[in-house]
Image (cartoon, rainbow, N blue to C red; front, side, top):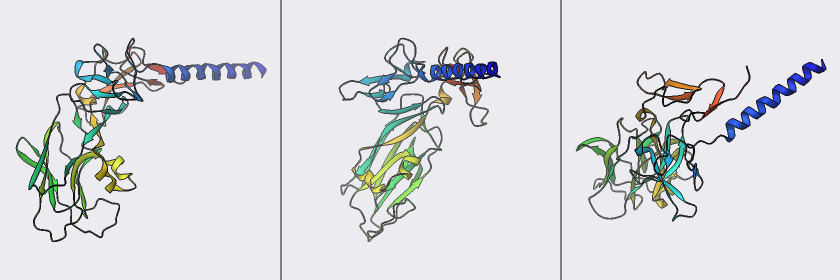
Length: 275
């Protein structure tokens, strides 16, 4: 009985050591920084030359800010968070704002990097009224909406009254967002009009959706997993290529069951249980 108890204690200690090792393992390429300010930069992204899986995953750490801020080198979008497990990256996205009497204002967004806006996790939102907010791509109108005006509405929801939303199309990395002033409504509604693409969960959790009126940027989610082809050479020795959500089209590195960590690093996947 005593021997069995000792063995159980030894197993628990070894398990604790393995879990601590997995949790403390670096998520950056060996010899590279893994933090820029408060943001952890996980491989396949990397700070500076030679620290990313390929050059367009390179991160610029701007030390003129306090604390420093990371930016995608090829688009100058500020990075808020990187998820290796989900294959996504949160960035700060510009809000198109119109507080003028111009009939139309436009914002052109073009990515020179291998990422798309997530079509499942983002929404295109128009806030305000007396306007049509829409998206164009290659000269074609691919979506938009017009909020109904109601100056007295107090609802903190985006269901068409002073605020409307649409989903966004796939393969979405170069587009224009526009706001056209409407002359049909007799109710002026809020003075300014806004259009933006943002993380739907972030927007849905706002205690006041109209607080966006005071923001220059909002968080949006980009997909990168489908743009880094999976291979045995790319994945950790305890990881393999996994089909993304049953698509049979996109595959990305994932630690095997019983392992955790960064599947893109040579020893990134560490054991989390004892068999």
